Length: 59
View (cartoon, helix red, strand yellow):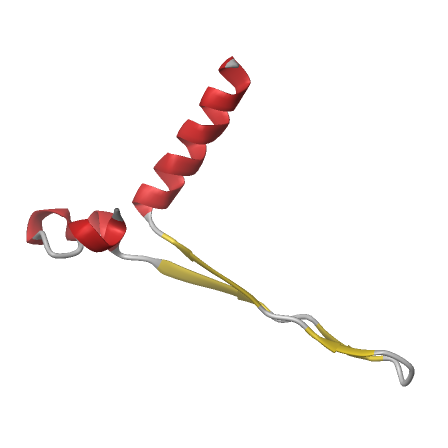
């Protein structure tokens, strides 16, 4: 949905996204891990998440 609206100049503020990156790492000499999570949030995504939670609670 966001990619379709990105082409419309009047709705550009809805498609501007913020990147949230979390990269926990540890080296415990026995176990070593490197994990990465990246989330791109924009206004449309937040509205969709809120709507999904609201619909789920109504059911």
